[in-house]
Length: 71
View 1 (cartoon, rainbow, N blue to C red):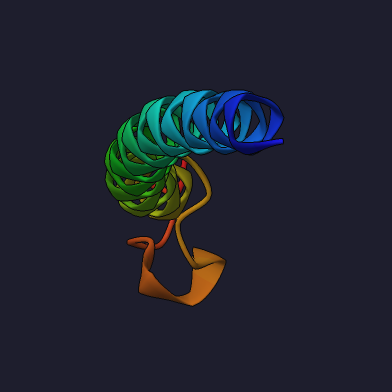
View 2 (cartoon, rainbow, N blue to C red):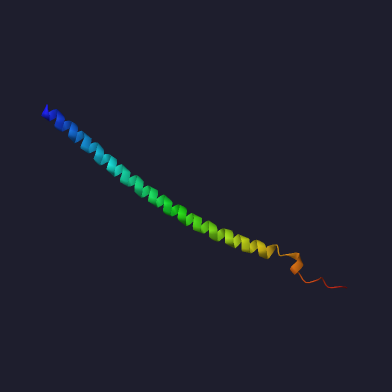
């Protein structure tokens, strides 16, 4: 009976070790994904700011335009 018990304990220890390893890999993958999302968010904020600036240059307020010359 003790050999059966020892084998079951060894099997459980193997499963726990495998799950610990899998959990560590998932944690690393999640950390990498979060860093990628943070980088993409920062890039999107910069692009949106540049787009806003370009729109203000392209579509200037007509009230700020000088009057047209008279012929």
